[in-house]
Image (tube, rainbow, N blue to C red):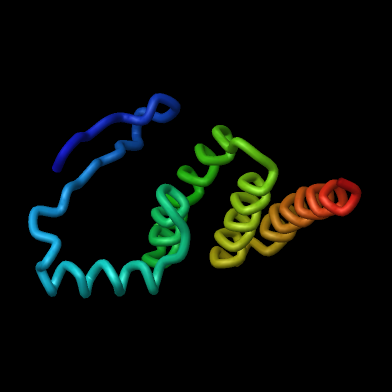
Length: 118
């Protein structure tokens, strides 16, 4: 463990920076490759997908809401709304899922229409 820091926007989230002690470890390399294949995304988005995969819906929702607060652009917001829709669908909360998917679709539509006219 290299560094552990608490996220400024949420006192319940911690970021842990890890370093690999031996990059030639075949077990670690296999685990890393499997993780990369199974869980798409980067950084916190990958963590959210992992939480969804293991059924930690409340924690995933909390993470995605935090990511939404700090989203830097429309494409990031669209992805987060899409993932919140996926999360609600997994929980069987279909009306909520539709709302999140609709938010994502509207952002993507706006972004794409802007790109077409540029």
